[in-house]
Amino acid sequence: MIQRAVKTDKAPEAIGPYSQAIVAGDWVFAAGQIPLNPETGEIVAGPIERQTERVLKNLEAVLEAAGSDLGHVVKTTVYLSSMDDFAVFNETYASFFQEPYPARATVEVANLPKGVLLEIEAIAVLK
Image 1 (cartoon, one colour):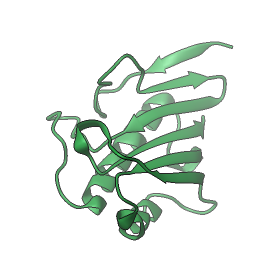
Image 2 (cartoon, helix red, strand yellow):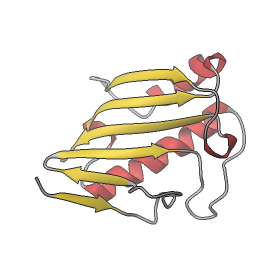
Image 3 (cartoon, one colour):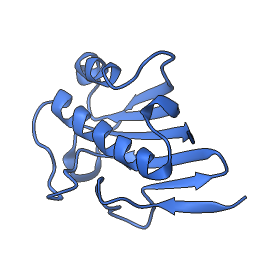
Image 4 (cartoon, rainbow, N blue to C red):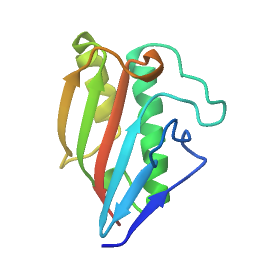
């Protein structure tokens, strides 16, 4: 199976030895996105809803560069620094997706890169 790396300047550059996404066959495997502003490289400060919006915009940019979009996401994994943020996060998350919603796992973690409140990775199919 041929694989290709996805790279776009409309989302933050990878901050380690990984790709923003990999396309393998008809599948897109998007790396976890955190609320980094791709233009400044700075963390988007603020409440969970603001950080969630930035993360999903970053994810959307990566998926578009791969030849997909949020409407073709089949699975996400969400890492929250606190489950206390779940209800507010969920409202913002829902505004980016339509039914049928992607399958999802949401877990609370002890720490995330750069001290952010969340990270989201996704698996999608190509358009």
